[in-house]
Image (tube, rainbow, N blue to C red; front, side, top):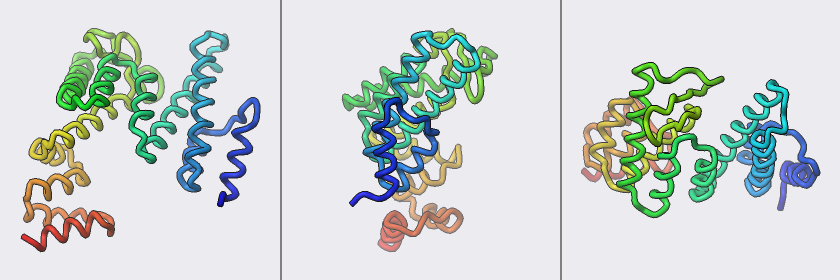
Length: 239
């Protein structure tokens, strides 16, 4: 049976034109009230209309254009979160192929979808290092709230367009997932220790069999009381 929020959202989604609802609110309602099947198409339609508005040059007022661009980015951010929650990897990759500013991002996502994780991981690593080098030599400057704009000095990275923080975080997150697929647990252990990523470190320590370090970590940074904690404890007791 549907709940009240689902019914209200479905009614709003059938309106023409679509009502203007903050994407962050839609994301919360979709997650909290199991309305992914209603909210995601709503956000998709809104994103396409905003993308057409921004790219077609229909808006002359720079202030309205800036608001439309910000709303488009927020809408895409919400879509990414919801796709991740329902584990729709193909649609998640599709969104990033549309919004990515670096050619390496689209290429690496395509390689991942084909199961070529080693090549994709190399592209993500290369993109991260080149972006960091771009920052260190001062070839990156502010491009609006939370955005960076590259001079495009490195082929395949930026291409003269803005490289946002979200895209850089995507590179790191996908690099970690590629390392998981390739069972590079020693590499991930060192990475998680260097950047104090305790959630990832929990996962790495029990896979490499470092039980003493895992027990110490559970005392300092316990995980939520759930199946994952019981799994760690069970493996620890068996050693």
